Amino acid sequence: MQDLLNIFVKSIFIDNMVFAYFLGMCSFLAVSKSVKTATGLGIAVIFVLGVTLPINYLLNTYVLSPGSLSWLGPEYADIDLSFLSLIIFIAVIAAMVQLVEMIVEKFAPALYASLGIFLPLIAVNCAILGGSLFMQERGYSSVGEATVFGLGSGIGWFIAIVALAAIREKLAYSNVPAPLKGLGITFIITGLMGIAFMSFMGIQL
Image (tube, rainbow, N blue to C red; front, side, top):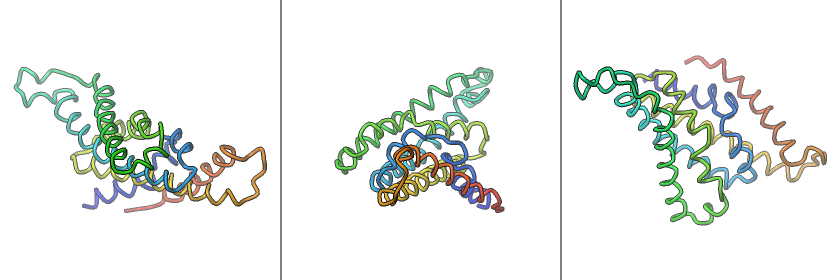
């Protein structure tokens, strides 16, 4: 239980996808103009990461890793399908994003319209693929750890984009110098938030 809590807290605050690795910056900057759209996209990212990571973990453990097909028989023990990892991970992510897009379009058409092209672009959001690749690299020992890491990473991305959206909404009432309006001040704020999140590196669980 302690290991799961450690993975969860670290993935939100210490290994934050945005502020530690700067992954998913395209949609992070583009959709953070309002809290409502940022919240919708953030929830979608949590769902996609929470579903795709355990699926990709099982595929990596029982199909893609060297010798993982030994459960089919001793003659399959030498098969190595790890070269297919990237394309399989992307296929799973694309399928889950398509499912999310259909659900949002059905039950929240206003949010679907406001997110526009950035909802299907979750499929190529490097934070989503980065989660699966980090899972593979770190060698989590169970599907539970992979799921907790996926949910924590999604929540961390959600917190980051909603916090930035709230700040950008307040900036509409601020006297920002003309050369910095728009993305200029947004980049500065993102850098300052990244520095602020570095303070969580001292957390000991």
